[in-house]
Length: 102
Ligand SMILES: [Zn+2]
Image (tube, rainbow, N blue to C red; front, side):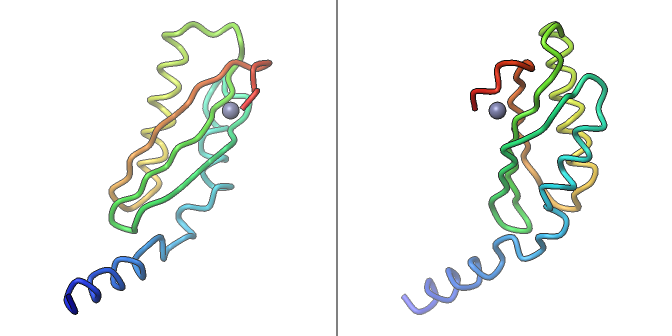
């Protein structure tokens, strides 16, 4: 019991202690630098420093093909991963400009 308690405390202390590398503004700048990206919002980060999860919405030009939208999602994922020195999972939600209901 005691050992489990210590483990939980240690995990809690490790939760996103290094927030600098996960600054949503920095993530937004990285993603908005990609061709055909109009905006980036709803950036959420969670997890621990050694296992980070990021999800975000990326608004793109509405006339892009599915192929191009898919490429952008992959580029966003790779650039975010390239800028964060930790194991990170990225989920990109692509939406066309004019449909930003959420
Ligand atoms: Zn959205």
